[in-house]
Length: 232
Image (cartoon, rainbow, N blue to C red; front, side, top):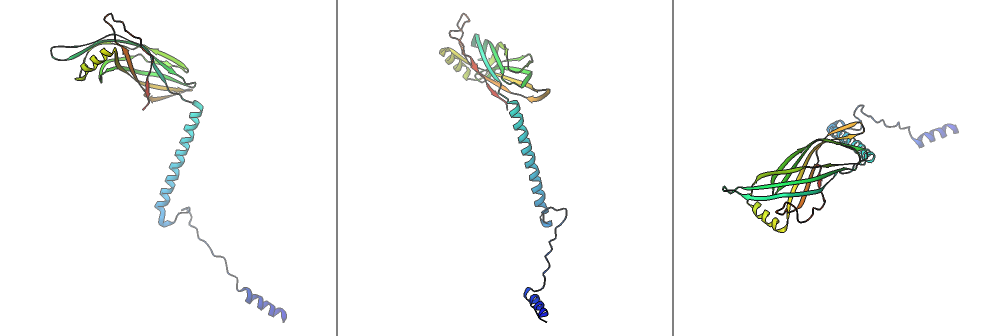
């Protein structure tokens, strides 16, 4: 009798057993709700794009650490103007007669990268007018190597623009002529056994050239000039 009362007391005190609630999970949708499928698609695409960017970044970093690429270093070692005369004909057309010779050194400081110079175009500019044009022979440049080129410009060229006479007279009085030499390259990079195309750096060399005398010699000497390199 006592046991029966105690059993009823325990049942009334604890109450009936409550079964655990069931959670339903859709298969094939991940954590996405069916009403927000576009949001899930965008989120998946963004994660995929970010993973590609991170992977490419790691690859570029590893290649940079392995190759340690350095910039090409072009210098104009010597340059001489043996002739540089401006004349005007009866039609008021200005003609520049000139002779410019120079030694252009190109230094490859890289230990693991060599270059194929497949196309080299040099241009001479004076007072925003192109006065000379020359294509040089292609060549291969090995690692840690310096190559010296010898472009030469000589011609009688019509120069346009009203300012060329003023510029010429001023610079002749100063004893120096300022000529820009631009070098356009089309190259291949060689890394181990791989050759990479599509490399087109440009060299921009701003030269301060001593004016020639009547005998063809310069009064002062030319200072070695570093050229700017533009890769893009």
